[in-house]
Length: 240
Length: 278
Image (cartoon, rainbow over all chains, first blue to last red; front, side, top):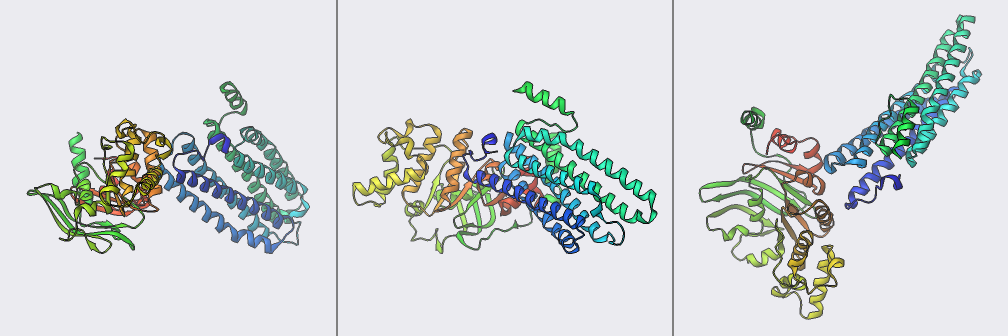
């Protein structure tokens, strides 16, 4: 990021500091959210009630961080009137933390559902596909945050593409759950909860994808939302 | 159309000025002004303003032209003494000293409360002499070595030394606008002031020279208390910790700069900083 955006080269040292600080705050929030997702998944798959409760309670911390970063950004916008790459940095941060906060909410859902799935019926553990979906989503989120920290556009485009695989995995799992429910109506209650968890994971993938789109916007100044990836690659290539 | 909308903005119900809103008094005040009224002949330019300059902070005075901000700034080191028709009432304290007391020598006061003006105004002398002049007349140096020391450190503090160290004997007026302004700041610093008043110090400079001066102001506040009058509210937002908004001789609102620029309490402040009039 340092190389691409030259954050520390303003004449005003305090402005450098402010940008560096707010960027660190975002990375810290990303770290916390990542841990929430990881813990939510463990709580769900291992039926760990204590951990599930912890995830639900920790969501307040994620929310507080969003408010705090929002405030910092508002102050920087009001006092510094950032322009060009600095302005894009502010806009991308404000958007990124909204997605991070939503990812936090989805992780909280994993925790809440983990608390409610009854252990007598088939729990989440037996669904290998759920574990697999969880791993893919975790990896995608991790890659997105790394790409954000390094401002790596190539990686970001790659991750945007990989969201399709997550969607496919989600569809497969949904089909499996429907089958399960048709076989034995007593399973419906748990199967629905697991389906909601799968949905939460799929949404985390979408939010990670959004974050990658903000990276492209921040570094290249191009809004790549709602465009096909091929078009994006083409236009980025012609620019170079 | 313009007339209608601006009168609507200025004279609607919620733009009445009913005393000052916000926080005009500091816990640790370097200068305190109370119930200040200033008249030019019969015309009242400042109407019952009270405020503090917080120690080691930058206080920005903003407001439309003719709102009294420069008049108020000039009262703080008795620059208005020289204007025959100007009458100043109220209390002005530097720490606990009354600056309008009979025993206060205005020349000494202006060494303690320095002023930097809108247009850089170096003396038509060498760079060295520009800075050395004040310390000489105030007897701050007992020999040449001490004087050299004062000149060099003042130029360093003003962020100018590296640019002029090889040509201290060149005329001060040979420098660029931004450099001249930093020279004037060095000249002000040379007499070890406690407070620095700045009247539009960057309005005659290009954006880069402005950014350099602003960065300098941010560094200077570690040692000095600073009050700055500026037409550029963006500049006030960038460099000050406290902002005071003046309007037609009255202090409408004063408070933390962050608060003033994100959520001002008074409608007039909001209208001014969002560019709805002024």
